[in-house]
Image (cartoon, rainbow, N blue to C red):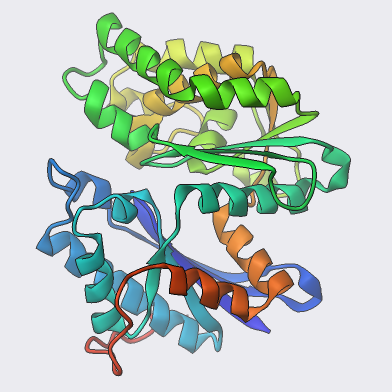
Length: 335
């Protein structure tokens, strides 16, 4: 069976098409559209007309690509940038009416649980009691558990893009006062969550997301060209050094560092501050990088729990159902 999943995040819309025979999602095709929705949000977080239209076109293209590859779905969801938008229902209605695809938003705790499942399956039972951290553009997801799904999951508003806009946009590079204020916010938001993780005493700590992957590369982890199956780890002390390095450079120069891409260079410092502060508060000295994250988590739940699980997820969202026929047609891109 071939299944597709598409998620709309703060920076990109990503489509993954995977074969799921044998209970393992094996990617056969991936596509991404760089929309940078968070940068187009208004002061209150609302998405404007142009941003919504670009989202509709990207989701339509994802649906066309999935059909071209004869994949079920796509299972479509949006993360914090849409979930927290005051006009969220309007955005989801426009996507449904313009594409025939019902996109839902997942609660932050559900995102944390799905990402935990992906990391658990990637690392295996040998990981033991597992803590999971994932930095997105709008939020930080944290989870802990001893089994397949977490015993504890939380989402806090500490996304790398969100904090960059709030604390680090006045000057480039930012001053010491801005960094101090950022750290204070992170410590405040993470106080209770970090205390829970410290109390649980995980055997293994895993991180996922593009932000953590790039930071791990900056800290000396193997480059992506060496493949998924190379074990990648990051030490907290190295991440502390990365914070100092990134803080001393303007965004354009950060993009010249190993692992830091130009589109994410501006938010890399905020991501590093969140990551280092979280690890310090949680008493975690070393983390392993999981290449599987929320998209793989969605695929795994779909494989393991059946299509009814996704039906329940979308039914829980109060967005209106899709229109009977898609109003916008976009041809699949050439293969």
